[in-house]
Length: 543
Image 1 (cartoon, rainbow, N blue to C red):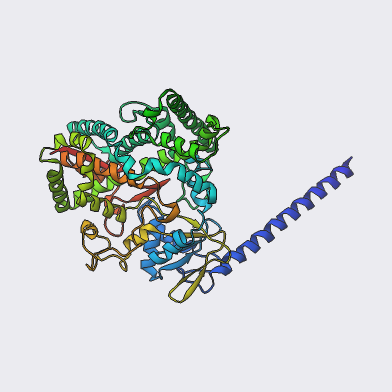
Image 2 (cartoon, rainbow, N blue to C red):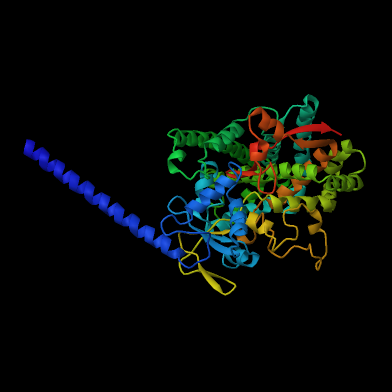
């Protein structure tokens, strides 16, 4: 008996030792493969053992806590005088990166040879959108579903939905009036998120989410899901571990799916009950136009749509719209308010334009937009403000995956992309590069109004908050429309001031220790996408 146990223990020990040796050899092979790629290539200060880990740690320590990682590229390039394409080696704690800060090269990987999306993007947002959303799909499958939903996001169609958008914005104004009356500090990002969720719910599903006025099952689950996302800025993998996370993510996913499936079922029933003339009316939600496109695509059974098949496939795309449709806009609203509070001349010019387009009485603006939606297209300076805001504070970048044997070329040098590497056209770095933008850190809306030949005139491809090509943001027209409407209502009626110093004082922090190298207390943090730190605390005053 003892001999048998001893032999069994010996066999187990040998097996464990063999596994350990095998794992060690695999690690050493991978270590050599990753580090050898970097030899002789442009990169920040690097060592064969640590790669760029030491430099990245020092950079993170020198910046405000939690600042979005996409800002690192700009600071690395500036500090170490790096070229417009360079590598970053954070393996094994992060993916190796090929950072792209050149508009022509960025276009080469997003338009001319559209590289697939990198898995890191899906890893960061799959708890919200699922694994088979438009964000993750590739090839024919992506092309098919993009075509199904394109009609609903066409500019002409969205203009027919403007009256409903305005109604949600009027509720937002009532909420802001309450904050103005109380003079309390509030998070502008939180308030902006609720109105944009209401808008996207109506535009996509023709449903009232009531996020601004009451509790909503989907919104509650959605906001909870954001809090359970792994911290992508945390280098230590052990700190990312939370035993409750997978259970909470699954629970919130179930709640969101249940809510949206119920709404889609209601839309299906409504579609069956309405006649052909009603189905052809202009102001229809995105989901109805998608049903039309899906039916016309021929993916039907004996001429009839399979409701369950369509809903299951469309569910994850709908969650992308709910997530992306509110996210960029809510953040942009915050940054517009922040920028105009710092540049009063731009604010005065914006208000003057609104007076010319809508008349001098701000209280009449909502009704005028509802009656004459085309008026918002006349807000040229407002459009320039939005573009300049998205230049300085882009919500995200397109993160692509390299391909074996695919090389980038720039200034006589060849860059291999590698299949497990991130090829990253970094919007933030492109938008703040002094090589591409005169006075690159200044807020100058006139960049978007000058004629070609003017020193301020933007270089083609240097501005890419929505990206280009077949993976460009499907909801960019909606984002601009609703941002213009909210600006016209909010910034003519109220004056908004950030309250970071008050917040820091209450938290026992020193604001001067929380600033970017440019002296900004407001900066972007990573919460699925780039959001204003601390939700942009504000006080608001009625004009």
